[in-house]
Length: 161
Image (cartoon, rainbow, N blue to C red; front, side, top):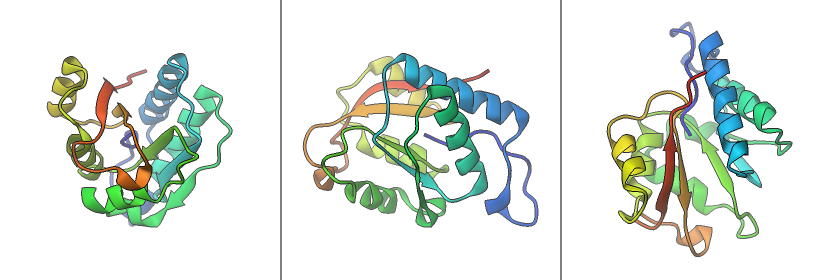
């Protein structure tokens, strides 16, 4: 998932807060995920303020209690580095939520796509990855084996309140 809409850049990009619309969109994303029965057992969230605030709104709307793992490296990670972060997930975790920034999130989603998923979702994902956008994947095997082209796109959603 990409973080929700944030205020314009200030003294520190990492300290940008969500806009009112961004908070509403994040809550809408949480509701959408909850309606589909998706509950992460682990959440890896960029340590940037707008990502943390997105997580808080998503989790509150979804009714989740999982504490996020805040990752400073996700803020400036390449898609390959983000993939390495995901590979560090314990195999006891069946559902993982990753919340970061573009272009990393969009690049990672495109990289993971195995080409056999939901055609409409893949097409929508390829036309742009706006704030609050999220892709739902399924994959077989161990997290350490996660690689380019190893996950099936099940859904793509851009929540707007």
